[in-house]
Length: 126
Image (cartoon, rainbow, N blue to C red; front, side):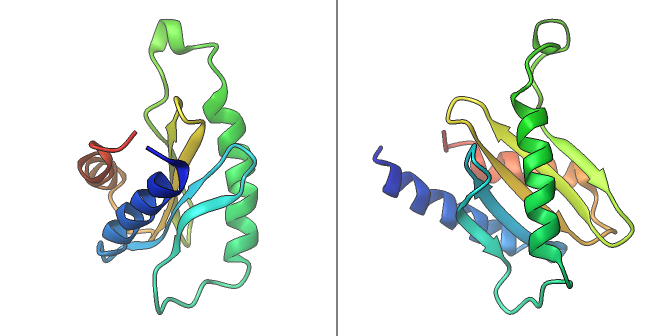
């Protein structure tokens, strides 16, 4: 599949995630930390500094996600999550393509339920 078609498909999958009430942001980021699909939910006003914080979190997550030292003993990373006072941040690495899905959600979000929804929506992609 050509990259532009894949990015369009990723964008559509992120929009499906926007249908979940607690999700504020769903985006695909490349290994350089650049947003290549998705983004903030339409009509949502980001918290002040949201985009800057998300970019910083992305840098941290992308570095952590590509680390492989525990893969053999513990298995690969399925997702990384951080629960903050104002938001839940969850990232899902796609190791083969070296991209990741980043989700920002309301603090009341159930991380396990979000993970199940992501797997459901993205299972046929990769």
